[in-house]
Length: 69
View 1 (cartoon, rainbow, N blue to C red):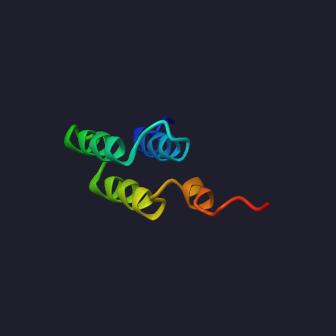
View 2: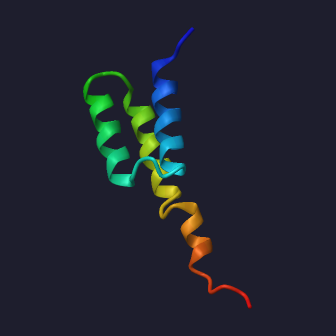
View 3: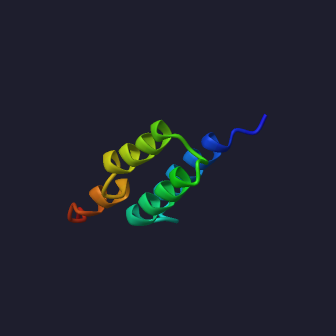
Protein backbone atom coordinates (compact mmCIF):
# COMPACT_ATOMS: atom_id res chain seq x y z
CA UNK A 1 0.00 0.00 0.00
CA UNK A 2 1.24 3.47 -0.87
CA UNK A 3 2.36 5.53 2.14
CA UNK A 4 2.22 9.27 1.39
CA UNK A 5 4.27 10.26 4.45
CA UNK A 6 7.11 7.92 3.54
CA UNK A 7 7.02 9.13 -0.06
CA UNK A 8 7.23 12.79 0.99
CA UNK A 9 9.97 12.20 3.56
CA UNK A 10 12.04 10.09 1.19
CA UNK A 11 11.78 12.50 -1.72
CA UNK A 12 12.49 15.63 0.31
CA UNK A 13 15.57 14.11 1.94
CA UNK A 14 16.82 12.66 -1.36
CA UNK A 15 16.09 15.96 -3.06
CA UNK A 16 18.25 17.71 -0.51
CA UNK A 17 21.14 15.27 -0.85
CA UNK A 18 21.10 15.53 -4.63
CA UNK A 19 20.87 19.33 -4.41
CA UNK A 20 17.54 19.41 -6.18
CA UNK A 21 16.20 21.46 -3.26
CA UNK A 22 17.86 23.92 -0.90
CA UNK A 23 17.43 23.87 2.87
CA UNK A 24 14.96 26.74 2.60
CA UNK A 25 12.89 24.92 0.00
CA UNK A 26 12.78 21.76 2.10
CA UNK A 27 11.61 23.75 5.12
CA UNK A 28 8.84 25.43 3.13
CA UNK A 29 7.72 22.24 1.38
CA UNK A 30 7.67 20.27 4.64
CA UNK A 31 5.67 22.99 6.41
CA UNK A 32 3.17 23.07 3.54
CA UNK A 33 2.72 19.28 3.72
CA UNK A 34 2.25 19.52 7.49
CA UNK A 35 -0.31 22.32 7.18
CA UNK A 36 -2.28 20.34 4.59
CA UNK A 37 -2.30 17.27 6.82
CA UNK A 38 -0.27 15.18 4.39
CA UNK A 39 2.41 14.50 7.02
CA UNK A 40 2.33 14.38 10.80
CA UNK A 41 4.44 16.54 13.11
CA UNK A 42 6.78 13.60 13.75
CA UNK A 43 7.63 13.27 10.05
CA UNK A 44 8.04 17.04 9.73
CA UNK A 45 10.50 17.00 12.65
CA UNK A 46 12.46 14.11 11.09
CA UNK A 47 12.80 15.98 7.79
CA UNK A 48 13.95 19.19 9.46
CA UNK A 49 16.40 17.29 11.68
CA UNK A 50 17.81 15.44 8.68
CA UNK A 51 18.54 18.69 6.84
CA UNK A 52 20.10 20.27 9.94
CA UNK A 53 22.37 17.26 10.45
CA UNK A 54 23.45 17.32 6.80
CA UNK A 55 24.00 21.08 6.47
CA UNK A 56 25.97 22.23 4.61
CA UNK A 57 25.59 19.80 1.77
CA UNK A 58 27.86 16.85 2.65
CA UNK A 59 30.11 17.30 -0.40
CA UNK A 60 30.87 20.94 0.46
CA UNK A 61 32.90 19.92 3.49
CA UNK A 62 35.23 17.92 1.26
CA UNK A 63 35.59 20.78 -1.23
CA UNK A 64 36.91 23.17 1.44
CA UNK A 65 40.25 21.37 1.65
CA UNK A 66 42.91 22.70 -0.73
CA UNK A 67 43.75 20.31 -3.57
CA UNK A 68 46.80 18.11 -3.01
CA UNK A 69 49.64 18.63 -5.45
